[in-house]
Length: 162
Image (cartoon, rainbow, N blue to C red; front, side, top):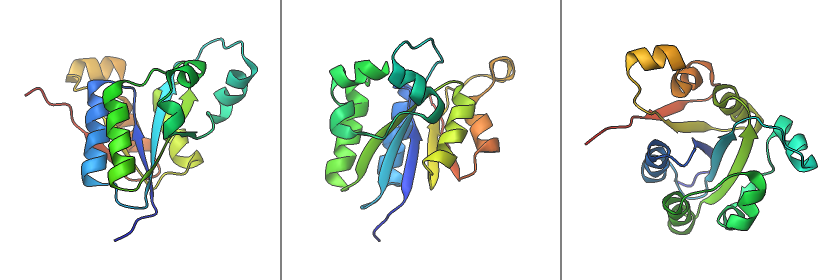
C-alpha cells in the first residue's frame, strides 16, 4: 500500500531519539511517505536576521542532502550525528521516502505540539529518556506533554537499558 502521509519524528540526536527514528523507519514509514525530522533548539539571542525570522515560524523544510552538510547545518546551530544521518539516508533510498528536517526554537514541549499543527503531521514518533517518577515530576516529560496535548496520534518509543 502506497503512502502519502507526513510522519514526524522528534530528534535531538540522542540515543533515545535515534531509537525512535529507527523504530519509525522500520515499523511505520512506507513508500511515498514524507519523513519530517523535527528538531528543537533552545531559545537564544540570535543576531542573524534569518534566525529571528525563523524563531517564530520554524526553519524552512531542509532537504536531506542539505542537513547532511555540516557547513549548512552550522548556520542553524544543529549538528546531526552520523548514525541519525545513516538512518535517514537508508529510509530515503530503500523506502523511497522524502526526508526533510524542520527546526524550531523554544520550549520542546510547546514547539513539538506546534510542529504537529504547522507542518501538519499525520502522526509523530518521539523517544523518551526513561526518567524515573521523581525526575519526571520535577523536570517534566516532553513525551508525556506531547501525548496529552498533541493533535495527532503520538507513539512513544521507550528507552530500554539492555
